[in-house]
Amino acid sequence: MLGLGCPKHASAKIATPRGFVPKLRDQLRILWRTQRYTPHAFAAHPKLKAEQIERISQAMVRIGEDPEGRRLLSSLGFKNGLIQAKDAGWDDVRRLQLEKIQPLQ
Image (cartoon, rainbow, N blue to C red):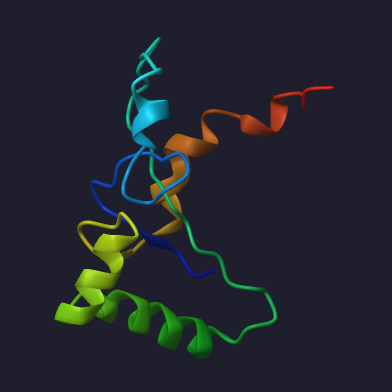
């Protein structure tokens, strides 16, 4: 499985990768803060070979090593590039047991 994470990246934003839409942001207030959770997993299709996954993963990490790549990632809200993750890095999210949440009707 290809796992890439984004270290110290803020939570998902509304409408634009650079932050909340100003008019909307001014109407929001924080009701509750959670602990930080591992964000932004990239997954690979199971039909990909391990060497393909590794090459793609390394290429994605290297994007942040290039000035133009860092600019591109920053414009998408990835301020610290991408890192290769380990499966155990998502244990915090697994403990939430999101599969038990019933969908809204």
